[in-house]
Image (cartoon, rainbow, N blue to C red; front, side, top):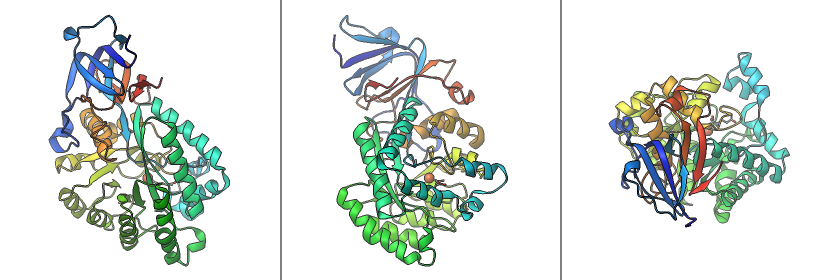
Length: 415
Ligand code: NIG
Ligand code: FE
């Protein structure tokens, strides 16, 4: 028996097959999905070796078989925007929200990111890691096979290091691809309220070089938004990041459209994320760039703000990924199945577009779509096997139901 070889049989629908050279999808392609019905898929070591119709399968006695029993197989979700490493939940603010306060009002009265920064100061690095590890384990069971994680609740050299070291430990502990992003400019700490310059200096001249020295970040992020960091500050932080080869993945256009998209594109951003508020020129800039948009519907749902214009992006041939934005303030949800349902229901995009956005395009937004994000020979065997379902749109239609039977990352079962 060859232990590193496995054949999964009786797959009702094998979904998301792409050729090797398709690394990102946009426009009409978003609504297309290649499928084989009544299929098998063969895994060798960590990778997809072959797949095809059950009727063409010639099994050897020596091969290990797993019977999917009519379940459907999709590529794992690739969650390209999260703040998974945080100290504590913020359900007190949830009550404020129920009582009618907005995200901005909660932040003004001492809640928000600054509150999470206080929690981070209090927690030990060991507990921070344990909490984050548990969170990631749960998410992997829900079908996530690669993830980006940001810092940003430190707001000091020690605090940011605490988060980034925790992300590094997660990278060492888990098999899944993890990308880490330095988000030093997430909010202005109280003690710098009268001296923003000093905080920017700290980010540019202290945090960045030290983070670089330790190789702790893959990308750089800024929360470019009214009352947070302006376009000029975005420019300065991204320019400083570029000196250390950190490509941008940035928060822009969550509440206001102030030119962050244009500046991020100038800096060759990999992705511009949020985009709940878009002006005509924002679409035009994206159309003429190679930057991918990243949309976060569970953030819109939770803090009750507009949904990003996914349909318009498809019409305008602009590629986008879907991600969870998992964080304690605006999206305490890391379940990509719920994100996908919300995208169908609230953004009114088809299940095909949702699957493409959460698999191949999510991988593209982390620069790993040559490794994962589709059913393609030679790619990592990162798979979701569902319970028997009528057809794949059921996954999103039946929002709130867990349809996942098992998940696999790099050829290894997770549950
Ligand atoms: O992506 N917008 C900025 N950052 C997070 C929220 C952070 C928080 O409230 O803790 C977001 O929505
Ligand atoms: Fe975010």
